[in-house]
Image (cartoon, rainbow, N blue to C red; front, side, top):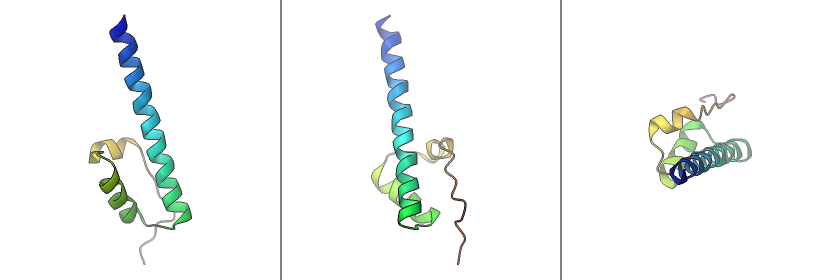
Length: 67
């Protein structure tokens, strides 16, 4: 039973971290007007997320238009 609680705690922690990362990207995107490439560079520098993990976050930058 203890193992079940540990797995549940790990899943909740992972969900919280994903939420924090999604909020961080929103802040960078909206307040700093950063492009998607810039945000990905920041995430690569400050997190250990793989490309697959970033894809599962479904990060969408609606008005990210290349100039």
